[in-house]
Image (tube, rainbow, N blue to C red; front, side, top):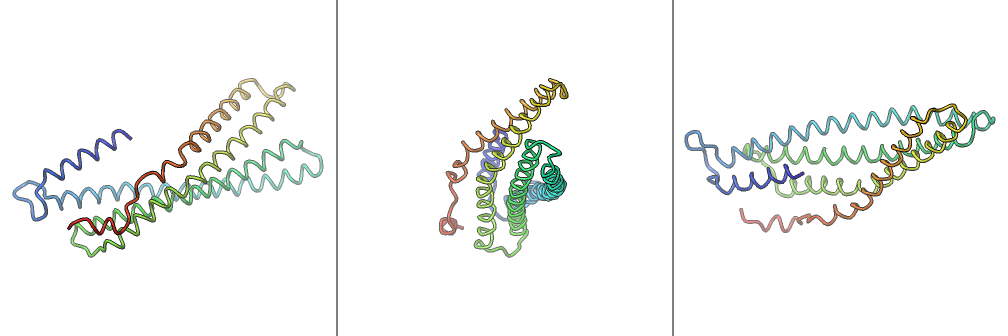
Length: 226
């Protein structure tokens, strides 16, 4: 994060030092040339993130299908008293966690997709394309809102993960007491629960920070001089 802020400051300083508009003299790059290259490169980065976000969505969907089948199987086994209640509960909690993860993954995809589109529009502008401020603002705003909207769902997903980890630890301790699960497995489940609870608490504490960031209105953007 500090590195990104440093790059932003350096980039702003470079813009102030650059001649505005026009063509470059000799080998000196112009502001418009620099901005076109910068936003094109940023767009490539977001393009990669879009690809990874799509992969994540498909991964979570596959996990959901797998664990949903296990849930149905365990429900049948529990109805016949073939497995204890805790095994069925673990399956239920894992299914709930998967569903929350899918919501967050889809919202993350919406966010990076909007950012990628915005970067593409800006690169198009510096290549003498016809891009309206209204369209560009709408694209950016879609990304900003998507980034903040997924916050509450992330909290719920982390909470679901913590509930699943807690029930898994409960079962591990039961099996360990019977001598059918080693101590190392219990310690691993304890670590997983601690991580899940920490992630949930930290994400919940930072939930309101996204909305505290200034989102300029279209009118404020329009008021900026050409």
